[in-house]
Length: 254
Ligand code: TYC
Image 1 (cartoon, rainbow, N blue to C red):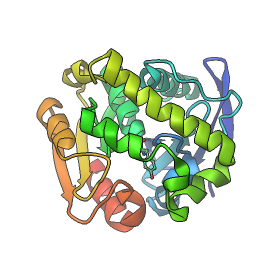
Image 2 (cartoon, helix red, strand yellow):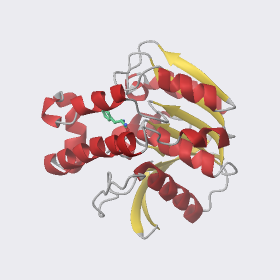
Image 3 (cartoon, rainbow, N blue to C red):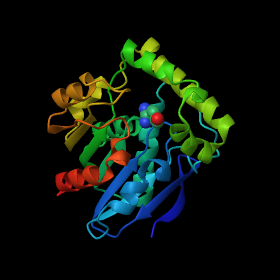
Image 4 (tube, rainbow, N blue to C red):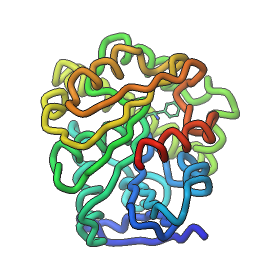
């Protein structure tokens, strides 16, 4: 069974779901405007429940962690990482592995750099420590959700309704631009050297939102990292190729 919970974290009611009763705790962090079920259904149902306990979190203003309505300070990813850390402390977790997709991968790396003693292993995909002009242009192209395919848009609209989703998706693009304009695109490059977790970086070669230079940069700058390429993978490789993804990650975590 997948069980739904709320805990007070930094003064907010943060929603998360858990499943499994294994020794090893996996914290799953979703992408921008993501949530436990939209992003991680295939992992919550597919992972081995006797080896792992999965904890999938809705960051503040996402999924069922509303209210509060989402806000977008300049360091919104650093703030999400701090919320994740406080949730771990509240739950009394002392050793975890983190799986993070896209923005959630960035949050996971910031957390692993900040609390090396907490994070023993780290898996990130669709993630990046900096933004280039090309990245920002790619996000700008998907700012207007009416230009998305129904298949991509509907899961979000189901969670948020059209109005909240369009408003905050657009604010997400603004927030990425703010990292680009105010910090020369540097999201957390200087933190990478502090990551001691054994790290698996997965990249979908057909990812239209994340250029190959990003996983290459992460691999070059995270000490104990390996890079795995999925030739057919796009941004959502953990959903589209969930079986391959799940066994790859379980093998890495062993
Ligand atoms: N997951 C991406 C991120 O966190 C955002 C994203 C989600 C992009 C869904 C496209 O269809 C998409 N940066």
